[in-house]
Length: 112
Image (cartoon, rainbow, N blue to C red; front, side, top):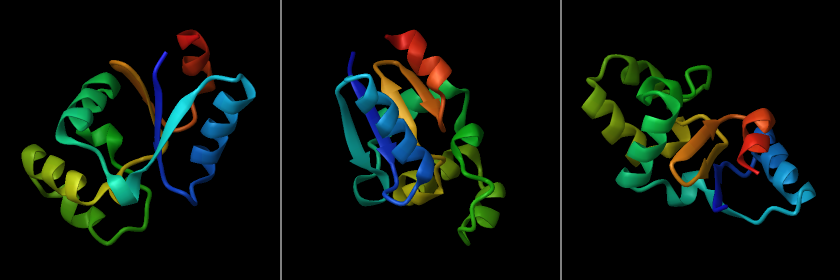
């Protein structure tokens, strides 16, 4: 199992995800999403696993670029999200080709 947790340092759900894996003694790699972002390949893989770009966006956030994002083409949305990963929902938890958005212990339990 190769768990990666993409998250923000001040995100409560990211901290809960880390605690979930730590309590079960499952090794994981934490990636600071605003600082390091995601590669285009990783983004496409997660996007395919969760069901599209629209589900990856944190539409309830308070970022000023969210309104602009609604009117962009899907290709332009991907470009904008790659250059500004703080618009993404967190945590993004990857296990190979599988991925989840948010706190999903029921899915993570099925991975082990």
